[in-house]
Image (tube, rainbow, N blue to C red; front, top):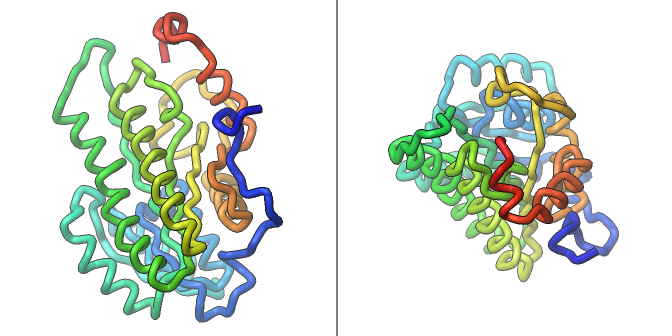
Length: 268
């Protein structure tokens, strides 16, 4: 099977990068940690002894996350951050790295998917999607990539979506944003491979989060906790692109093989 139609992974044996290292080197920033996959990843990392900086727009949920992690081996510090505010990232990134005592892992999890009507063409909504799903991702991944480049070690995880595999008419800009995110993360991965820094792209299917609530016809829905488990396992195994759950890889393959004149008739 050609590489473009299967999960990308290194052929070598897995190299642990997120666990099995000294406790003082377990330091992570999780952006978009107030709920869903981001919150589940932050809690799982804290359970493994990480010092975690958890960022999100909703302060109340962040405080709930910190309280829920109080008895865990690691530590969670929280900061309010709106992923729209790319300009504040450089100073905030430096502040958090100093407070954590370094950085080994960055997870970018925010994503917005506003409801779009079948005959709606709303530039304001589209630009809002791009601001969070693409610009916010670059704003956080770029300083992490530069730091990891200098220390020749580190891992970046980007939470994308299977929606980025094709241009679906149901929400054109959301698909576009995830496709852009996929390409950006691939480019970072290729560039940083020269210094042994790993970039992992996660393409979830349906996860039981606020984004999927109220949607009809969902199947293979998994919990955020299970998505977090599979995400971190993929990064530890230095997988490049992982569909979560893995069976969505075959769905993605089928979708990519559907001719455009047929795909445009599908209603999702």
